[in-house]
Image 1: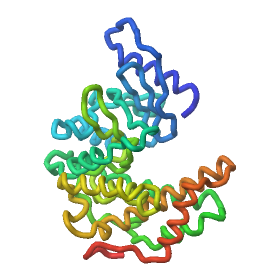
Image 2: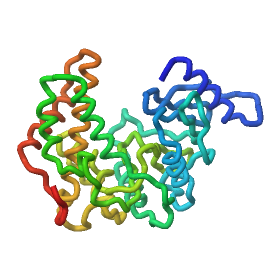
Image 3: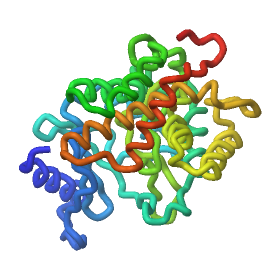
Image 4: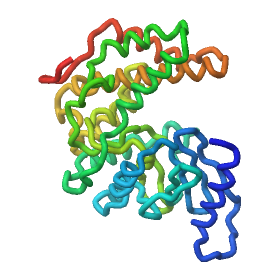
Length: 315
């Protein structure tokens, strides 16, 4: 985001927080929660403003906002403070209530059960609730873009196993063919950073930029990939999966092996994670760290074994 936009976004969030021109007693003033090309987020008091990416489709964003605001999603998705977006120098801006994020310094308190329960409820949303123009969830697209960035970045000694792992995936997982399942409401980018707790309330899912119809297994793919790469302890993965099943989540069978459903999405998320790690390390001229290397090593192992596919799905 260009430097001059942050003050403008700060002014917008102040105005949204004090629409009646009330005297501002908020301390501190405007704080920056995130500043990336795909989304800049600022907070003032209990109000959050998000400037979405400049290439955001306004029709798609409006459909996603409508889902987040629907009463059927109350208690699952954080609802926006206003129904639509406003323009800020070519970028749509939306307003949200502030929620307390997951404490990254306390991994033992990670709300895996809450995340799983919210996902299961999201995935069980009736089709009648969803607007006809709701787009596909963007999980597979983001994975494909990450691999494309890796290729565009030029040769790198760690790239080969990632590209091999990507190449063995079916065409629909690489974004080169239609997804087999486009019926279910999915978050599209699930991780613990996408949960917040409102004051005196429960955990809710945030960030609708990737929300849409798709295969619900993709919403379990990141924790599944972390588990497969050795980054998520077995106990935490088991807690997450058990809570999802207990809540009636449709992405995996209730009492059978989950990996035929999860293997391809988990591999795609591992390739996406590894690709972005390589791109970022090269851009900052730093070596890969231990965690990044472990994901690349996992890609190397994955590339040697064909992916497991659910019955009836083509490669």
